[in-house]
Image (cartoon, rainbow, N blue to C red):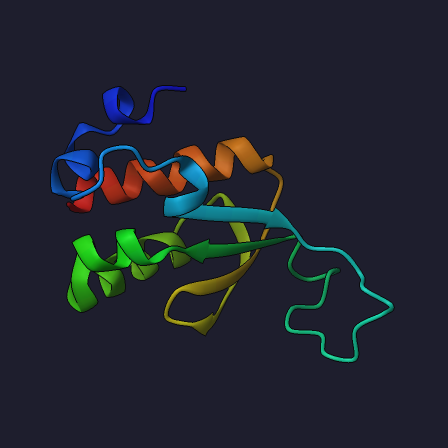
Length: 112
């Protein structure tokens, strides 16, 4: 996927145009980790963990990050949505990882 073509508003604001998806946004499947004593998100209630990386945070700023969070919280694609930190969320969704990435980047593209 050519991110710059698909999300021109985002890339217009980025200083470094060579960034890859992992530098902008991470969506990881949440699973039960028996080795960790710290459970940030219960894997049964939140099947994905979303991290909004610093370049996106910088181009959005605090107010637009709040707008993004509000739009994601209210999105029907997420059964559960919890904010751990301003850039880290737990969600429960029937969507796959790629669809969640597209959904979030589309919201960011509109907000920017």
